[in-house]
Amino acid sequence: MKKALTVAMAATAAFATLALTAGPARAEDYPARPVRLVVPFGGGTSTDITARIIGEAMARKLGQPIVVENKAGAGGAIGTDYVAKSKGDGYTLTMGTVGTLAINKALYRKLPYDPAKDFSYIGIPGYTPTLLVVRDDAPYKTLADLVAYARAHPDKLSFGSAGSGTSGHLAGELLKSMAGVSMTHVPFKEGGQALTAVLGGQVDFMFYHPVAVLPYLKGHKLRALAASSQRRSVAAPDVPTVAESGYPGFDLTAWFMLAGPAGLDAQVRTRLVQTMQAVMQDPAVQKQLAAQGLEATTLETAQLPAFVNGELQKWTAVVKQSNAQVD
Image 1 (cartoon, one colour):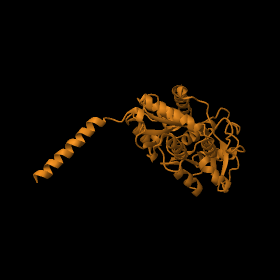
Image 2: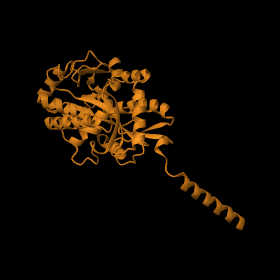
Image 3: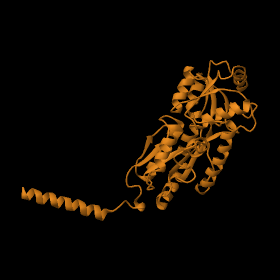
Image 4: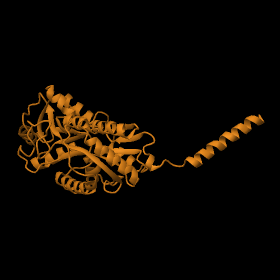
């Protein structure tokens, strides 16, 4: 008994000594363990797919796994706030979006995080328009057809989205405002649910990312009436823009951004920035992103704070113009 007690005391002392001598993980050793990449939307969404492409490529260069974790809800605010309040050691990152890092600030009265102050921006994988899609058997062949029906039947048409504050929600609200029609917004927890509702006829249309809708367009289950960007989508060049279809000035483009909490260790941030830059030069990664409908951007990391501030101002104006409200 006495011998066992002595051994236990010795083991305890050894662990205590190890803890004291090991100290916290050093930034120059980063990453010493797997990195968590929080996606504030559900699995299979364009944000999720983009995060997995970037995460897998960066993991190969960093020598540690980057584990994608989906934390959906509140238009992406739940998962984004989780990262905003995490330690700035580089082990918790997020794949932000135009919704989580720009739109939500203008749309939510009590957003628990500040996109301009609570994050360290790392890089932008790319941007993408959204496509306005209806069921292939819907009577609307053009955007003009859909608007004409909405004008003749107020509140009869409904549009789905991945949640209040997402780019799809704002695109629908802006279309309502510019066309002078009344339609019903139906928010879902994630975009996949809204898409299923369009396919099933529970809602009439939605604005959604090309990566999610292209298979259904090719399979003749959906029809694209318009693209939300100023220029036509490279993934669907035959689809006219909303601006071309009679609403000049309509330009809502979604983007993604890898970010960590504010106060991210400088050495760790440099490592992440350099790694992402290298990944974005990889032809294989470029091909994967292009297949998802993402278009490359020339923005450098140093330009990202000004970019986000500009987007915050832009989307505040869009929210005001569209009269969008959080449901």
